Image (cartoon, rainbow, N blue to C red; front, side, top):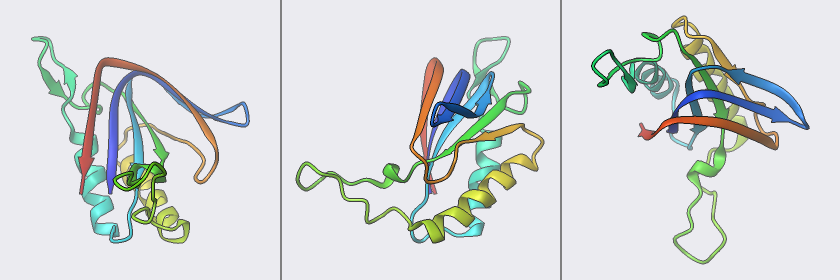
Length: 145
């Protein structure tokens, strides 16, 4: 599992010009799932994401989590996170999980994050989405299982 985590002032995702997910301050997270990901990996990554301390405290140190700041999380599935462009100019996506494997794990990931009490928005799995973000900092991290 691969996550691109961005600290944001706001983020929104739309499908066919209709907003399907939107948050205020918090995290916009692109979620890539590969063949060997499991429900255990999903649970561990969800817990780590919610506890990730990348928001500034009163001393301007990254010491607070999204939960600490009463923030929100926007989760967007993105198989292209497993694109490989080492050979040639066209990326290969063989490391990205097929939808029948990825969708249940992505759905589980959304549920695992939501049960922590952090408000969660999502994109639409498999759709052509447009993502708008106001990256705060900018702060962007890559997390891998």
